[in-house]
Length: 101
Image 1 (cartoon, rainbow, N blue to C red):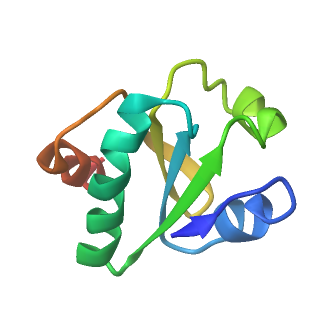
Image 2: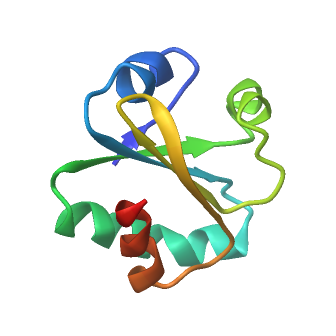
């Protein structure tokens, strides 16, 4: 999993070809910690999807620009454009369904 920052977000997500899953989270967030192993397992199973983790406390500007008000917030990008978004704790099956959008 790649740590997303204001410095690398454009290259890692917006200029990336293909699918990128961005996990907006925080260390203090219990549901985020529950989702972390799910997101990591997803990344292992879907090698064609780049997974980027953004800590909203460290990257407030990024979370504000993507209107992240509730975490965990998973945003799927395809070729730099947002194509799907899920908020809260979701099942691995629901996470995989995001790829169908």
